[in-house]
Length: 389
Figure: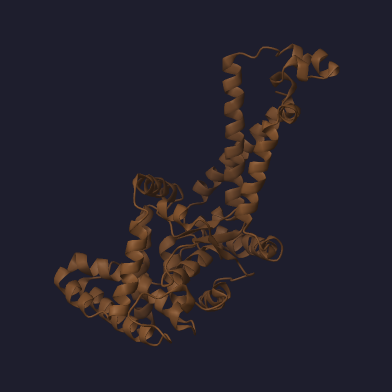
């Protein structure tokens, strides 16, 4: 391996390690990160992405995967593969006379197994370091920003059974009223035809207003696109994700119509720089709630119900059972359709993906791991209490 190649690889390793160490050193609720990165650097990146790469009609993830695939095919062609390797990794017949006579090749004509393993390990570490460094520069330092509770002065505390009962009862009534206002909706689960045209824009507008009213920047026009095949994401226990290397988010393409607007709002919240899952649920819910479209409002309420109802069932199974029996058939059909859809993708892969994601969240300073999603209810209740005060 040439000295220049080794130097570049070590540079990426050090940059990746340094970025992660800096994230740990800055800690949570960092005003420095909030003011310099989240409201400065990231805002600039958001505008840059959205009015350049974000104009692509093709999801950027597909383009990246295609580039990686083409690169792999290129390297599989023997003559092309040889050109891409350092001289010491090629056979003598693949070298130019100058390369064969060079000190680099002469000194390493027969690298040992240990040398090969060391070089391969450095190459892998280099790629990992580059990915980690770019992750934090492009989005990941938002994990250090000041939390939503502090910025909005919310007292998000565990919700007692009395408050849970009230929340569940009010949500059940709102679900019934909102679904009844959807033109043409019957007792069957909502189909894709009920979704508004341009769902992305219909979600982006109220979400940007919610963020701005709450004092958060909402720059650009982040893209949230359906990912095909959607079953791949659902097998990984994911309804969507934000892709920091492309500046856009994705939702599973085969989500039910009742789920898709809220998941779009959730992932778009991440695209605006809100990393915490509970906060993304909360702000996405507020965006759906304030939408002029009945299906989007209904989707937010249905998502909230799927957190409130299990919490009430754990606290008082009797109250939860009575409340569930009061839900209109149409609402029950939407809940049943979503459950049956997710059941099709159960398996060991999902359990493994959940364990990996749990580790990822904790590595980013979210001590609750996946339980951070459950703060959704506490944040909504705190928001309503503050509004009453």
